[in-house]
Image (cartoon, rainbow, N blue to C red; front, side, top):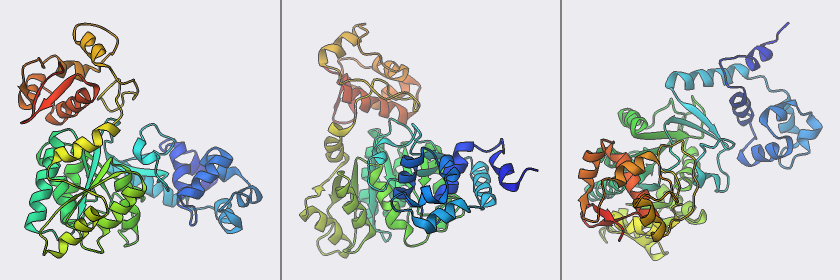
Length: 396
């Protein structure tokens, strides 16, 4: 006779692999480090559940109590409810074993073994985080909107935490520029926090992605947000701090960014404003003072890997840096450096005379965000050069 657990494991509507990943991560005491240690020892979450107590307890950090919890796991219904919630939302689960897992995040300490995602993560995203005070001033909102719009127009994916204040303003600036934006939550995907950002949540999923390491039904508890901050910085090439008090959570994000080897930027504010103290402290500690988006892009461009194939998002990353000679040969019909179709479409519109980005968008028939993303990749590869005022021409 089939048991309840057998029925759960044999449900053809549920991805077999994901069920085990979610079940193992749901066990109290199984954090990201122990999860990976168990994977190293047994090969897969399914194999972990098949292991005996003695073998489990022998894994460093596990012990008898957690081993007993794994062997006696019986919350199949809870996992099914979470999966059903994800299905209703049209969300997905990405594990560290998946190719779609963000490459920058893969390299941080205590990386999340699971990500719950609504929207689309793209392999060619160039994320930069913008964070700051929940109690943003008019100046802070203005500066954030200006920087986030400009970054989005350059093809950068603006990343933040969808909190009140600076975070929400950063997302809205990117959306207004029809660019990509990524939001990292401190709750489950079905618990929008703060609740007034429900519309923003929906808009972000259409032009980017909302993601979290917390499963459905998880409430936004205070201790979730420092953990969320490591993902915001870990996803990004750099973190921009706008308006932060001396004990702001944004300073935690900046500290984590430094520990992760990311660039840290700060926007200076009025010298007599308490909200300026955090950013000014970071500048004294070595953060880069910025006045515009170009200051950020110039710093992160050397870190962005050159790819043989830009969008679409499922294209394989790879390829070597192209020399100017190879670029010239390709433009004249050579085949040493094959380009993606969207790159070819945009490059065909560029000449040695300057052309505005708006004209390239109109001529290509592609979405603005896609054209701008392609342009930044073509610039990285040495095919085009950008001039002031969003004009482009072929590299001489």
